[in-house]
Image (cartoon, rainbow, N blue to C red; front, side, top):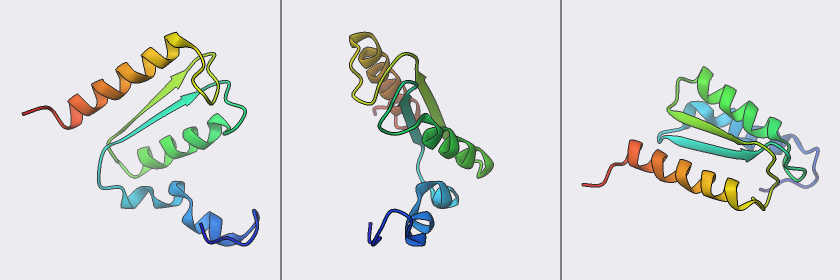
Length: 93
């Protein structure tokens, strides 16, 4: 992303959470609540920023799921949520 180190201010400026006002398409956030790679607060913060910006979006929290969507049940939930979101915001002709 062009930053020279993890604390570089450039990262903060480039963060999607600071770009919510620029969103010009519906956004779907899907996050496992037990993700140890990317904290769920990242998606919670983006959800809040999109709400403040009055942007069309949806946030799906997957209970008991990790970063890799390891559970077949939550993989199915993720796929169903994605299909439902696309159909709702870009229905087939």
